[in-house]
Length: 149
Image (cartoon, rainbow, N blue to C red; front, side, top):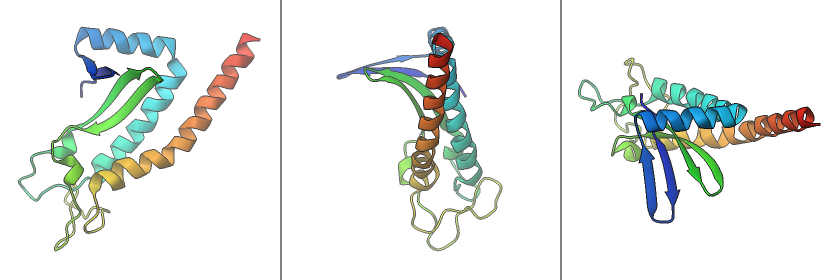
């Protein structure tokens, strides 16, 4: 899946795609290899788990399970890496109330009835991973400081 770079400043947003996006990503990864790798690896795990359990409609799913995307961006505060589901309706997908939700393999999803899929599979795992990411980034920073001495 293609990745995009987005920069937001006030009301202006710039989105790069194609060769410009690739150039930006390569530069970012060379400038901050440990940071970008840590952030991307963490989101890849969350993405994989979400895709495995994401509820799909029986037989006629428009494919929200296939619309996950990791995006890189910059703000005045620094690097932003996010995991999004590009389907318009993704934020409103609920676990089935009358029948259990099924994942793409046709097995029952772990999503409980009436619960929001994005909350269960994207938001909560991201919050849980935040402390781990901060610890890893702090360790990377300490290693860099030791090398500089």
